[in-house]
Length: 381
Ligand SMILES: [Ca+2]
Ligand SMILES: [Ca+2]
Figure 1 (cartoon, rainbow, N blue to C red):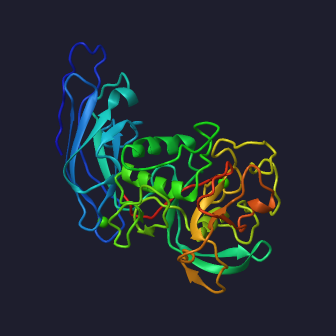
Figure 2: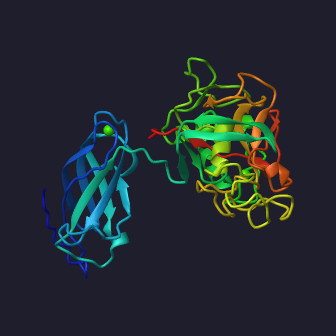
Figure 3: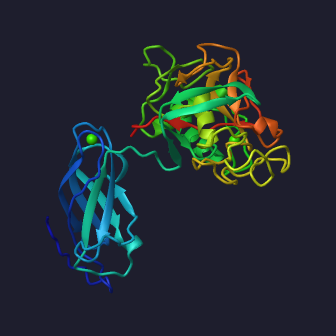
């Protein structure tokens, strides 16, 4: 543990802080814990920025979650409201030496000075989904509903993360802008504004966009033109090959329905307390006559919004009849003529918004009632 005291330049009328140091920590879970060593901290001269250096090793985890906590009482408690960190902190940090985090103390802790500041760096190898996504636990659920689209049958689904809301126009545009100069052909789509869901995007558009989102974030893309998965799918209308344990992709129909049910059993809609529908639960049936901003209605049991209504959501699968018995991670048939979408839209009836309701159309179809959300397999940095 090192301690550095830094004299603040005189132009600072209320000198900030100082200092330093250290610590380590961990949480962990997989076979080998991450271990943090060699933590050093120093205030950058003439500024209220603090550089926190550390090394972290973990032989069996490609990436880690790193957090920092700040104490102003020599480590008795770590309660300084510090959030303005940049550098090797947060999600997807690769183990290694010479990591650096910078804390903007001016932003978080203005006009403070203390000689009792300590930093604690924490590492976890438990995978957590990125901001805006929810981790859906592995396990069996009952897919289908004999009242809607049956037969109801047990499906075992591996864990996955899924977007809390439909993909918004803002996110669509951010990724599309990045992607257009990198070999992607992506439609502008349509929307009523940045916080509304993107719509008027066909199945090919959204699959390519998933790849663009992955590449933009440094993830391995999910969709390829070739079976060897060397040629990333970026343009044209294809039925791509899939790396199921890579970056962003569409949910399978089973993943979508499991997410949509929110952990509830035997319900018609994504809410657990009733089989009734009402205008305050979702945007449907032309009650409003347009999309609403993504996430305008209450979340289901998994914290997901608009799983019923607003816009339909494309899924991976070609349409086919359900099998009868237990299936594990079903992905639909290898070929077909129509791709599924789920959940109903702002213009559709209550029946279409039931969580087991299935609808499918040619993948080239675009409509102002169809959008999507993405999933991400666990373990992706
Ligand atoms: Ca580990
Ligand atoms: Ca929806």
